[in-house]
Length: 57
Image 1 (cartoon, rainbow, N blue to C red):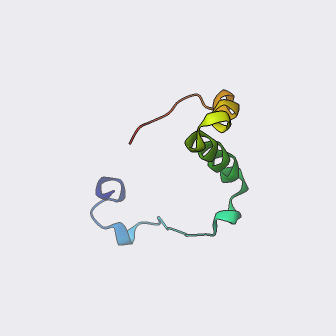
Image 2 (cartoon, rainbow, N blue to C red):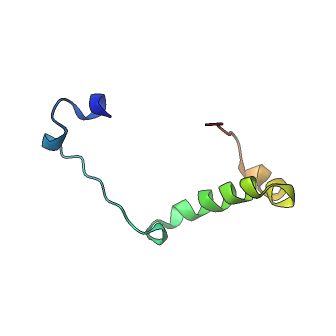
């Protein structure tokens, strides 16, 4: 983060805004697909055509 913001992050014009999860409708799709994948079983099978890549963290 420090490298992206420079030596004086408070002097940048970068702002953070925490909004309610219902404020970003496009994220609902990824959340639903991720839930299906995590639920496993038939839910994972149904969502699998929507998933092109996964990352283990």
